[in-house]
Image (tube, rainbow, N blue to C red; front, side, top):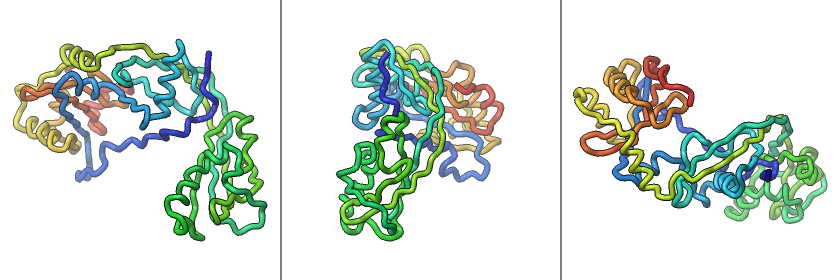
Length: 309
């Protein structure tokens, strides 16, 4: 069974998940409601899948390519590099993705902090570094190229993760775990200060199968099977929905009865997806379809009815 090299793919990085409470004017926020237009099958498919652009999501695309090239592919990482909580839209095809966790392995990783050098250690040009170090410090080189002479001063400092876990790759480095050189980038030399920590790696076995080669048809089927109709709303419920439509999202306080009533309407139907105690539905409102995310946050009568996914 083929395996991607035992290092974390450097492209893509970790996605920072925005809090449902960010920017909320309420001092005691209770829940959030998102509503996004989904007027046709194509829009429904985009809302109901995890879209992977091979240029912008290179890490996830590499995982999916590996899974599609073989019956299964094993990727070793700290956490699943591609979530399998919903189908994936890749190119013009919708795929079902599954992942199984295998053995774990504790290993060392390094954070290398660089700052302008003031000591007398031997120096090496950036271009002369082993590839593992050039890759790790590529942003440092780009910083110099973009800013030129103004790139660095005595207070400059950057930190770089060495996401390399196999001993053979790490042994090629001249900067971690024990720096042998200061590094010269242009005319500025940098001191390297590695910081080690132990992380646990897991083998994630991925497989992928075609769900639909017509995303619009996939979305149309989902709309036909799983649309919840918002009808007979109270004035307060309708006002809440309109607030969500204005900005795509609205946040309410702990005691908002209209929010609880809307949540009850939604929870009378199985959510299409249920993750992190949030639920997602396709809703028809005033003759238009919307993708709706209910995040009860602190409203326990709704939150406790949604699982962890």
